[in-house]
Image (cartoon, rainbow, N blue to C red):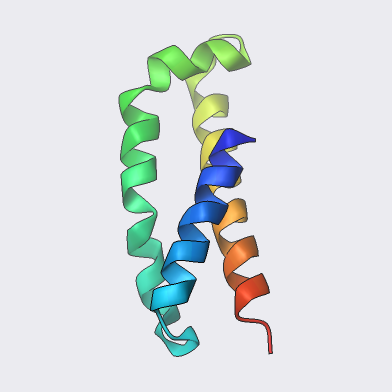
Length: 77
């Protein structure tokens, strides 16, 4: 939930600055979130019974879904 909210908040900030035709640059904004997930993967894996692969997949999915969901809502035609 927190990962999706962080992704959505980032999308709102980026969408307010980038025009809709500059979509390719949005993926670069998410890189710091993925670095944080990797840096704290051991601590966060306790959320998913110590399985680091599931933790990585769930958090990355939540970040991406939150980000692109908010992006497309703000730039809907």
